[in-house]
Amino acid sequence: MIGNTVETYDYAVYGFLATVLAQLFFPDAQPGTALLSTFAVFGAAFVIRPLGSFVFGPLADRIGRRKTLMVTVLLMAVATPLIGLLPTAASIGIAAPILLVILRLLQGLSAAGEYCTAVIYAAEFSPSPLRGRMTSRVQVGSVLGLFVAAVVVLALNTALSPEQVLAWGWRIPFLIALPLGLIGLYLRSRLGETPEFEALEESGQTTEAPTREAFVRHWPLIGLVFLLGSLHMIGFYMVYTYTQSYIIGLGFSSRQATLVTVGTLACGIALIVTGGHLADRWGRWRPLLALSIIVLATSYPLFTALSHADSIAMVFLWALLLSAAPALYTAIVPVTYVEVLPTHVRGTVFAVGYGLVAAILGGSALYLGQLLINITGNPMAPAFLLMFGASLSAVAALWTRARLTAEAPTMQSDRGLDEDATTAPAHH
Image 1 (cartoon, rainbow, N blue to C red):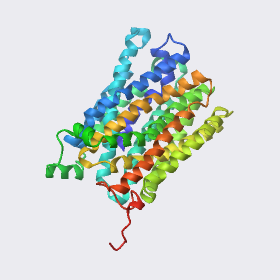
Image 2 (cartoon, helix red, strand yellow):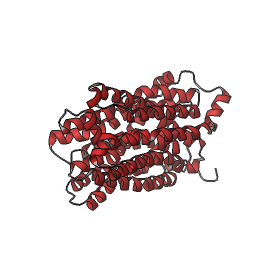
Image 3 (tube, rainbow, N blue to C red):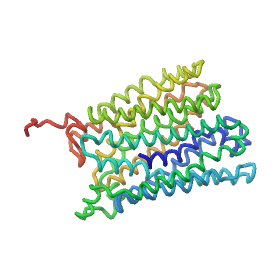
């Protein structure tokens, strides 16, 4: 969880500084176009993630979960501080955004292996009755990383004037990533390998070509991971990153928008912890399906209410309600990713499917949300992205039920996965 917190902080602080970076790296563009360009660079880190998944997914299946986690945190600890050292467009012209893109691509490579491997690591160490809540702790790390990033940016906007933030203050959150990364690297160096991977090694069942096997024998599962991740990706970045820029666009200050984001993230941590317990109590597919339907039904009304909010208190209320169902979804889906996949290619299939959904739906969420508003003039238009993700994930929840009922995977537990799959009497 701590390692994933560090990784997510490094990755997400860019999003919280999007409006500042737009002025520094795209100064000649119109404000709306500059913000779109900044979001496009944000999305570039997602576009590279499928490539990273082909590197780190098979690596986790070949050399182990622990070593892969050390590589990902080291790469992020190098790329993020370098963003804080970049000269701006005023100093070196077009080279500035080019270098920014390159460093975001390195961040994307790291993120491609980070989350998936961390979830697998947690799941393979957890006993069946606790697996939902233990894997949800990795997701807590993701939200906690966003929370820390938001708090740092809030402190920055409070302590410094807008001119100071624009001149040099924006660099501080990126430079903080270096000591955080070293802490994460130290913690992970003290971890052991998971029992399941050690068992594979001892029995000689690890595969030398996990990518080929994943695409030849398990390609439908890549699609299942993609669909499961649709609401996870769109929901996570829409409600916890995009909403800050959205609130600023409503006429509120950057400090007010960041304060709202900090509040929703704090509540999100509590919701994710709760969601992990729900996964162990009610199984996987039922709550995933219910939450997808809730997002589908409430996104547009909640965006409507948010766009018409006339006080920061009402903005916080509607932003919190908008984030509640996606937060619970992201708590339950991590363990589902792991349990529907066979152990020996789990890293590869998970990373590829998750990398694809991150590139196609996660990285584009901020850009498309702003683009829809620019094109339609409808401030509620971003709701359609959430509704689209919820529709895909509802299909995935039903597919998950069918798969777990038809064929019990390696890590299935009668209570934790799907009560319908368990038909034998208790004394059997």
